[in-house]
Amino acid sequence: MEFVSYTAIYSAVELLGVLTAFHNVMRTRTAQGAVAWFFALVLFPLVSLPLYWVFGRNKFEGYVVSRQQGDQHIQRQVAEGLSSFTDEYGADLTGASERFRVCEQLASLPFTRGNQVELLINGDATFSSIFEAIERAEKYILVQFYIIHDDQIGRDLKERLRQRAQEGVRVCLLYDEIGSHALRMSFFEDLMAAGAEVHPFHTSRGWANRFQLNFRNHRKIVIVDGEVAFVGGHNVGDEYLGRDPRFGHWRDTHLKLRGPAVLCVQLPFLEDWHWATETTLTGLNWEVTTIHENQQELLILPTGPADQMTSCGLMFLHLINSARERCWITSPYYVPSDEVSAALQLAALRGVDVRIMVPEKADHWLVYLSSYAFIEHGLSSGIRFFRYEFGFLHQKVMLIDDDLACVGTANLDNRSFRLNFEITAAVANREFAAEVEQMLLDDFEKSREMKRGELSRKPFLFQLACQTSRLLAPIQ
Image (cartoon, rainbow, N blue to C red):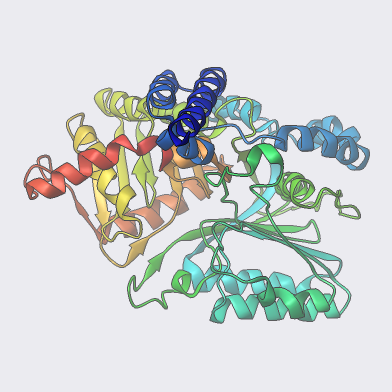
């Protein structure tokens, strides 16, 4: 009788594995991934089924519907003005910058003119500027971070938000519950008691997403009164200010934005808020603050697993392919897709100065190990790799020729390309590009250049770990 029961259970699991395998064929974005999952689900359903429920899908179920529903409300607030907004504030890209306009289609937003961009280097500059903007808020403060820690900087941010909420400023805060897994809801009790609205992103909201813990909302956004916005690599944690003895100095970059682009940052926050709370955020400012000095043209490019296309990966592909003289990228992780890896190699082969800067220290060993294998492959094509040695490198920056500089949240890895909600600011301004160039030159001075054969000189077990880790690249 027991044997019959076990047989029935296994038969049911096998049937579920077969059905899931066909679901995988219809939904998985890459042919390699679809084939691998298909055979695993059919042949080893007991092991592969739970893994597929957590890691298998690349589409974030339900967000698209939520976005469409939310957009009905959003359109009542801003959409009628979107075409006039583009006509009035859309940037007239000319010359070399014209080749970047395809990114507007990925963003579904225009390059805007009349912006002011301030480069914020490292945590002290970033949080000083954010705290100053919070102090000046009159109507509302929108805050979204992947990681918030219950430490000194986390409590400093919470206390400033609590004070402003108590003074009548509306405070809305989103955090990723997976990135902030160590954070207890009790941390926000006094903030919510002051009237602030605090919500996790709810990655697993909805039946279809119950086990989908592989998605992340990786955005870092602060918006004050619809007049100033902050975007970049910093999360809220003491390590981001160099206070963690394990990492020491923390190298990161953020941007402070004023002008029409602020409203473009506000839109993805509005969509994320609608998903997380199932309510529409009303009463926001959609009037453009006109900037008369140091005007710069930039595009806000929000990307994520709810997009129809792999917008983040396509952004990297297009910008790398657009490079004529220089393509410099800094990222804490280097686990590129095959397409991006090929684009980088081709750029180097056609004579572009391709440089990738990654950290010497590791914060995620699986990613660190797999990156060694990808780097060794890239070195053979003439790509130059640098390991930042003065602390930990976490900035996400890209410099294309003298024409475009990008700062945002997206890493040079498959997770950012396919699984994370990200946001990037692409600034098409030669003066700003020169400022970023100088910043990166200073960083290269604090780095060592890697040489071919570095991996082969490592112990055999290290090499094996690197090559094995590379196999898991699609889910890293």
